[in-house]
Length: 313
Image (cartoon, rainbow, N blue to C red; front, side, top):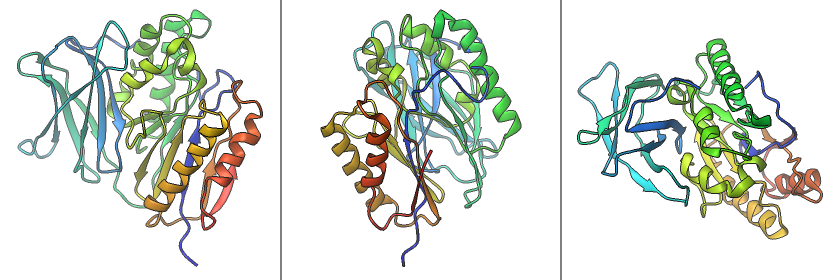
């Protein structure tokens, strides 16, 4: 009997505006860099970056171990244009991070200027670790952009102060409300300092779908191992494999595509993961005709027969 594989299959839970705490603006970031996020990388040894910039030239991310100031890595950014107006987005990724290490990083260029320095710390890389899960910050609901932004900052601050050794943050959809001023909503979601000091992941929720919102989502988030620009992606962390599914794509052909993606990722990437259970969140979305049945069957049928116990939450 082979080892079982801990896999978290994540879909956005669209059931209302609730979270682990009240969820809304941090102080403005220095120009030319703003709305910056430290993202989850392909595995525990990598990190992604996403930011907006007023500088049109080439920009970089430079990352330095705090206790090795001469060991700086510098990687170039690339432009991301999904059709959003009024700002330019750039993404980058760094690899080769070592466990239990604090890093300092800056974004920008000598010509255009550099951002403030931020810091993050990798976990120790063993099989005992944790992460923080949030959902439905929904910045902008009831037109309360500022209030929602303050609540989101309070939530991330309280959670990370309570569990400072968390490996990363994961927000499970509906980061913004979608109706109204989406740029202001994204500015508030990016306002907590914690999204620059903890690697942060997101899922595509139904509110990200409103008002042609996918272009804002695509430019703001740098998803590891994303397929076909459809917000399906995966990443590995220590002894676990995480799979994110864009459950707003819920037509029969989409469900089949999701199933094949899950099967392929588990088959190719799950073999070295030891553990005992698999978690799958069900979707409750107004866009799916029979949402719970649809996504439960997706999770069950999308997995190889040799996969571990399925837990629907």
